[in-house]
Length: 201
Length: 201
DNA sequence: CGCGAAAAATGACACTGTGTCATTTTTCGT
DNA sequence: ACGAAAAATGACACAGTGTCATTTTTCGCG
Image (cartoon, rainbow over all chains, first blue to last red; front, top):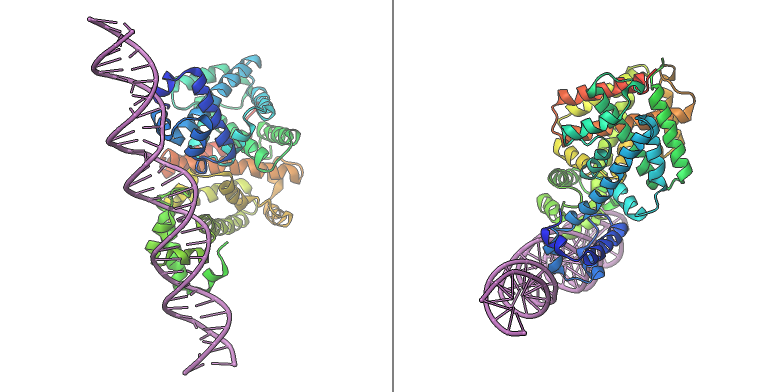
């Protein structure tokens, strides 16, 4: 989390710094990115940077949080529009995700260098395990009669499975340079397999 | 890949260096690990290190390759023992994996700091997409009549799904400090869901 | 206004780690 | 036993980090 001093800055200056950070993190992984580049592009001194953030990780996760918060909101809305049809919603969510052109290089970098810490942020888009309350909020939006689960525990694991598969497909989209069409086709195929079951009936 | 000079070393010296590397990579992620620590523990000079390896990544992936090659072999054998029952085999594989005590800290570090590049190595334990030939070898061992797939493409994606879920469970085992029992219970629950299908029949 | 204290900005500095390379030491074939 | 090839060495130049004493700016108030 940014320090208070960052939020005391003018919106303009904040934005300028954020832009510089996005630029750097679009070109380098977290460990390769350098504070020197960011402060140079933002036109501030090295010392100032450390008044705003604990370090580059702090800034990195700040960017990531903004992004995932936005996506989380989008997922909620999609789920409402589909009347709680989870599979329909997550399919629409994936299609919208791979079509998004904003922050493309940043997302590529994040996904190809994803660690458990980062993945957890993404998983919280859907299941948000941190608070019981939030899980209930999401699960209330889901029409469970369409799903083959009994009870909250199974629903929770179903969401886990869906997120694993979704994220892996998204990563592959970048890792293998798939076209949007190919990526969606692969994802839809996997959703079909998941829905009907992997074992012989 | 290590350079030729590394393999010219006596087995004893090779092992000593490998041990030092395992130690360092058990205590630090790839980016945090330092060559200084490794050469100090191994009792060689910094310059020598660069005669053997391109850099620390080279050594890291060398260790990882040895481990995944061994696991791949184990998975093959398990699949044969279960007469090609994929779900039985992968369940046994997972149980054996989380029970393994060797290299525990190294594995924890690798998994919690896993990137796409690293994940790809693990995925190749099962599906080994790099060569058509190898995929055929594995898929020949699988009894597809037990599975709900038609054709090689669906089988390929089924394996992808299984690997995503397996790896995510393994990561969580470390991330959440689950007991072996809990971790296996979660995994078995998810396998059951996968087998019977996630959508209402 | 203007002044003093609090907040913010600055960049030099001490550290840590990387990869290289000229030099020294060891190995090995004849 | 000797000379060339291979291997080992550590000092060095460079790049990046986080800190801190100092300077500059901001802001409340008489």
